[in-house]
Length: 176
Image 1 (cartoon, helix red, strand yellow):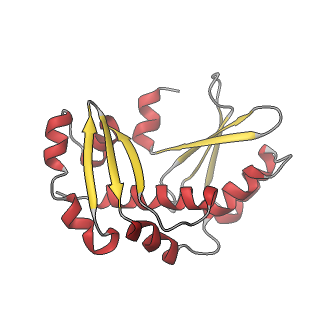
Image 2: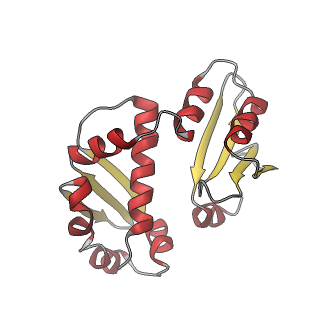
């Protein structure tokens, strides 16, 4: 079983959490819907089969995350990561990480969509920007150079801008 995409996703989620909340050496619980896990493994497993598919993940990731447990209730999976996981990510977080810059910008009072577009452009000259015509989001931005796999969706709520990031397959599932 190739766990690489799951490993990268967990690391990215921890980076985002630490960018938003700061670093704390603590146990972390991260949740995934079954559909996202199926995307990682290009499968159509039900929850019990996915649990079986993930049975070797704790030993695969042990050297970098320490103890990891995987459980599920129906189609919702929980990855419980030891304190070593938060420490591992913190120790490898670059000062100029894009997610840190984005979180800091969006947290700033008066942040604008133009500032967000400029931030993306400062990290790559291959940025795709697309208006969204739905009630959920106003703007989609993604890197086209493969440097960051996520689709970032932004909503201007008047007094501040919020964002959510999706893996391409999860974004497609929402049929925005």
